[in-house]
Image (tube, rainbow, N blue to C red):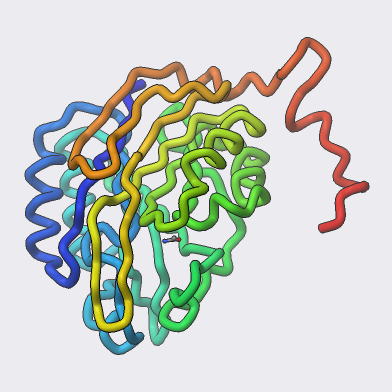
Length: 262
Ligand code: ACM
């Protein structure tokens, strides 16, 4: 199975330009799965809910999801990408998983980062792995990585590949996601963005360094901090079905949930 990420720098507030750029790149790649950054169609640094509301879209009927459905069908690939989602009066920091059939699954970011709490509503749905052809895929968004329970929940639901659209700001994810992959024996695609955004008092530098990690912690592909790039690797997703660390240890079956305090 070919899996990859597209790391780039979305331009803040320029949705049509961002979508045009995404369309151009995704029309020419050959892969089974591609992951794009968090809020990849709009940029990140919204200052108010009102400003954000102008860019948020319904899923699956908004123009961004419709574009991804077309690209997934034409390229016979599965796409995971982040976008602001509008549903009634709520706005979520969401990711969509679009299958080559055009079917769409949505994940709403559960653990909002910093001032995201003032403009987004946190997701309230259980972490769920979705069937995509012969594999099961789970979604996280950016800061979710720092809560091991999130990746664990997806692994317990059978996810073999964790897709993480991200706009990383803190320096920890590069290391922590390797641990998340190892401790759950899953593939992990961290698709980050690059660049800077300055909007009012908000000033962010995004770290790039997207990576694909194997269930035993090898870095199978890696981007630099600033490059715009697509990286694709070949994997055997069934490797993520083997949860054994030794002949006698299984990372899921050896858990002792009755002793854990949550
Ligand atoms: C983040 O969750 N965008 C840091």
